[in-house]
Image (cartoon, rainbow, N blue to C red; front, side, top):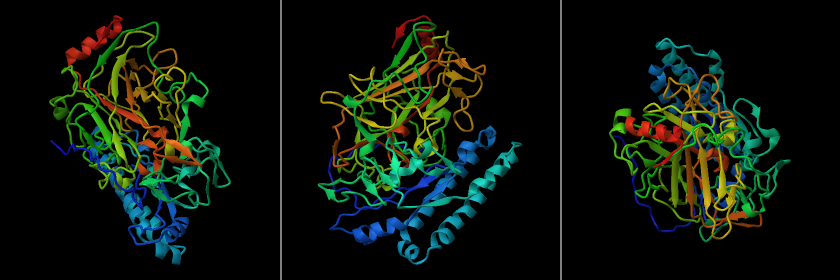
Length: 531
């Protein structure tokens, strides 16, 4: 069995890191170079605070088109090779960032250094990797869109454009998102961030206080910021659940009205890793952030379907060996957890104390148009987009709220600050229409779809039980002070996504036994509530 990280958490609080940096997006995206240091300390390179800020003002971000999302027709026999090459693209961007961060003085002395020594060579490496992807696809008789070769080139942006403005920059081949509005909820005006009080890349209140970063970069230097939070008691009620039509509950007062609940715990045994066997099989740290795992106990990048089917499960019903996983939630209170020095953890900006859910409610419901059919074994579903802040929210599926407010307010682009006695809630309603043939697809999305508003499945897809995951957390309420946030909480993210709430996502692999799946379908179609 492959690597699986199960380590007990450290309870020791330590000073917040003095310098941190954002690394790579899977297959493409932004790399932000953010450095903050105490006025009385040097960062890891021995630079003073003023030197660090001066360098940050010169450093560009690197924006690379997302190749993986364009590969929608990869033959099954080529997918492992393609996944490996996509991971190579990740590694190349990470290496380019490391060079960016370690050549500050050279950049200051040569205006062409970044282009000549970093971006140019990166384009050459990406071009060679994309060509290997072409060969992998064509070798097994697949068709390769030669226009994908144009995705090799990456662009740079002046780091004076602060990290919070990512949603308004031109990204992924020049498409501008939301007319300059930030996905994180605040509007940018002439380079000045409202609510965050950042101007010209200078961060207000960047000194550390008692281990907590008092600027807008969070404890890890790459978010969240004050504008990513809102007092839920001050939000006008809304009926929208999910972004657009994504994530709407599939069930209603007609059709198949039953439900099936499975109790799989809250990951009390600290089953974590930074892999994602769906999008990056065979690639360690393919997620670049830490996951909670409940249900199947053998899920890592190297797990085969046979190993997953034979694994232990944390579910009470031993007929459910399915894998349920999501990015961990952390509170950035100055604490260092077990992965502070690990890839996917503190080394990639995911810092702070990991919060175990107080509740993890996993339920399958029916379809308001008619009956559901059984899910096939090993069906994979990803819902939401871990890269939504840089990719745009077409695939986003986000619901943030507080207990006592769930029927009134659902948030997408901000984290809720809950009143005393109320808990933070993350709710996810999965895609519930299946193409009837495939357990996965090349981009891990097109084999499943959300039901339409009336509950019907388009394009000949079949209704399957809709998975609904509700996670409840006891979170110390952050405080907003003078445009900064104290003790923020956030989901783990790819670093360039700045810990934005819009990036929340959830993953599922079906390993119900045939008998238990048939019981589920029968319960749902006959209107029973089973568990």
